[in-house]
Every structure is written in structure tokens, then in C-alpha cells.
Image (cartoon, rainbow, N blue to C red; front, top):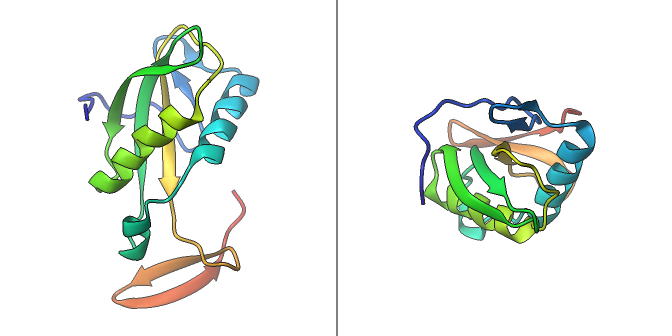
Length: 132
């Protein structure tokens, strides 16, 4: 797995094309939807309560395949970072973009009632998911 030395250029929910600015909403919405549809929480990470956000950037070929995938900023968990790479590959094909695209993939544990489960000092607290 390759890791980028550069800092993060994408904010929450934003997609950034390096050197070109932000993607048009229709492109970013499509890419986000494809990634979310393909997202699978790694079973062992979920069991261990591991959460995080992986920032990843890649090129999209004219046929929609992601290539030259780089972890721009690790989630702090190799399991989540590896899952992010697999998710991006599984989510293809993407709409073609000439420049690199950088996105974030968020892993948060939720229970069957769609409540966020937080592990705080060894205890588990529940709170309703805040709308984003």
C-alpha cells in the first residue's frame, strides 16, 4: 500500500481534483454514491470497535477504473486503510476525470437502530446520529 506525503486537500464530504479545484456536484455525488454502495465495514475492525477516516486519492481512467491508488492520510488502522482501497476498486466504474481525485471514507460503528455507538473510557454510550 502506498501512502502520500502530502497533506489533505479534501474536507468532509468534498471531492477535490488536484490542480483543478472542486469537482462539479454531479460528479462528486456519483463518486460518493458508488463508494458508499460498495463500502463494507471490515468484520474484525467492527468487532474490535475500530473507527476512523481514510483519505485516499487516485486517478480514474477513461474506462472508469481507479488506478495509482494512494492513501493520502491513514485512519490509523491498517484494516480500515486496506478496506478503503478494496472499496474504491469495487465501486468502479467511476465517471472519468482527467486529474487525481481525493476522497475520504468514514468508518463509524452503528447499531441496528442507526444509533452511533461510542466507546468512552471502556463503557459504551449511545446517541442518535446527527444529521450531516
